[in-house]
Image (cartoon, rainbow, N blue to C red; front, side):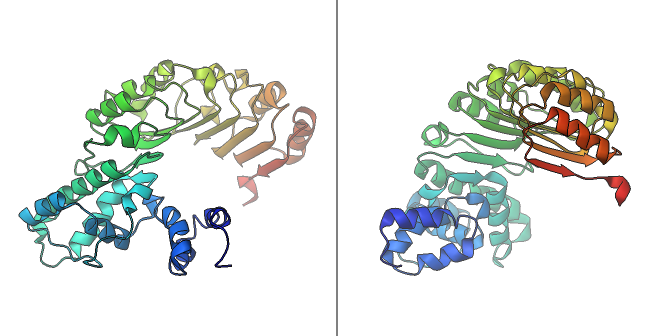
Length: 355
């Protein structure tokens, strides 16, 4: 097996993307296996652990190492030998908060670093790591930035344009400083999947980023505070081509806004509405989504009569249906599905009254 052609190895290792332990074992077989599996092992920065970041610190250019030395940030690395690979260049998924957390953990374990310097030293170290990523990553595909607390900063260093120009997935909180969203809006115009958690604070330039997207396919919006619901219509109005959207996920606590705006997504194929109460599905029965294939209610489900009307209009092409907490009569629901959903292949029903 160790003599398999490179193409076969590449295809095989793709199936191991979520099995880091096995991938690591593959690195140790021989040079051919190492070369083939290395790019997958380092692809997803969200899975990086302390050992990964220690290797990246060892790969920092002399200019960055001099900056760390200037601030007395001395971190022992796994080896003093030159790196065998340009590890940072393999990264396709970058998590800003994961970088911040892991580097903070590394510094906490350095007994020589005073506690009062921890926050500043973490900031200095992560900036040098971000410089490395932007200089080395030829085309980042996914960027996540959650848990902003004022201590996590993502600056756009030289190389950011090449690194981020082909970004296709972005997941973030709304309270990140506006400069972050402004810079992305200048660089990224072809994000396909956008996921935003709306907090109490909403950066003003987030609207620039949304309106700059020309081919958005998937939109995931979560509201965690009541005061942010008013921005929903503004967000939807900024979509330059709403009829390109094929996936839409919406999470919100108890609210009273209408869902009629979803009708603008004329080719929508996947819809997930995650609400706390059945009364939250205002105007749900009025939606016209003839191409809908997947429908999910992870928490509460709409009232029975609204659901029947919706399925009558939109059930023809439905092939996957998930019903969360409800008080439906399952026998009656099955009759409705048989009548209006002839192509349904997967039906998951959760009845909280049976618990």
